[in-house]
Image 1 (cartoon, helix red, strand yellow):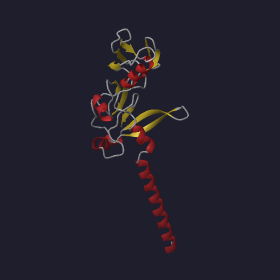
Image 2 (cartoon, rainbow, N blue to C red; image 1 turned 45 degrees about the horizontal axis):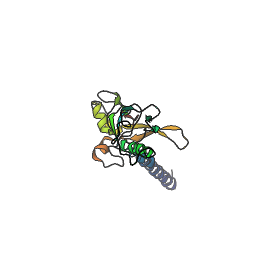
Image 3 (tube, helix red, strand yellow; image 1 turned 90 degrees about the vertical axis):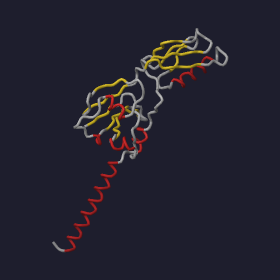
Image 4 (cartoon, helix red, strand yellow; image 1 turned 30 degrees about the vertical axis):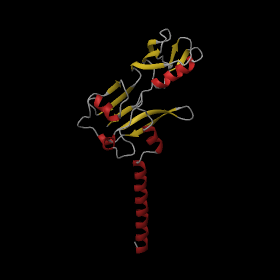
Length: 208
């Protein structure tokens, strides 16, 4: 092999190595969509099916309701105003919606909604944890909080290879799964693009 051929081959190797390292760096960084989605869950609880609510209309016992269960379709029923959407709203948002609808029948109605029972929020923790399974939680939890509920990591857990599987609805209306990286070191330190983020109902934590 002559010198020109040798140097040419070295250049090719260098280009290949640089390209490989660049692709590895790109793969190690979560996409912007994933970063934004990881931070999209709010710590304020969103109502869902089977949640039980107490609804108080100030100075009106007839309109006030106790132990109202959110139906599977996310709706509830109220005197005078009938059906109203509760699913996907916070308790304060629902109170505002009810008050707005009641204005047709009552001057300046004051409404409060409190969550008596949380039944719609659940996550799965699978793999190398003390007690894998489905967990119904009473308030929003982060990745590490959910792992703690599942009795923590086993000694075999590859904590920096954790991921969260989440179902998302695309613009076409179809549901697709995304995988959110959940490296333990980043969750604890908060140094990564994604910290110890809040889980959405139905999320699946996988600990290899």
